[in-house]
Image (cartoon, helix red, strand yellow):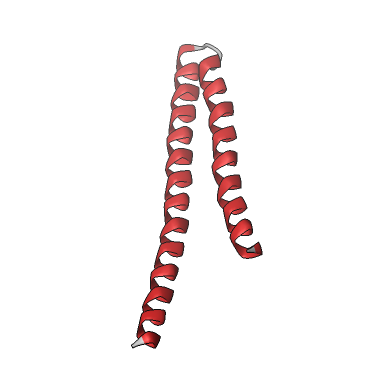
Length: 85
């Protein structure tokens, strides 16, 4: 009985660990796809209209990349902290 509970806890732990990895991967991938679409769209409109790229889009790009670095850094920091304990 005790062994089956330990096995069940192990599989729940593995399931939650894998789910956390999937959530981070989906979050980062989704944000990158959205960001690429926004930049390509603005670049296309800039070429079509004969203007420079919008500075707000460039600022959005900088802030979003900073946010992605923070998300990924936090994820790896949490994993490293758990491995040390």
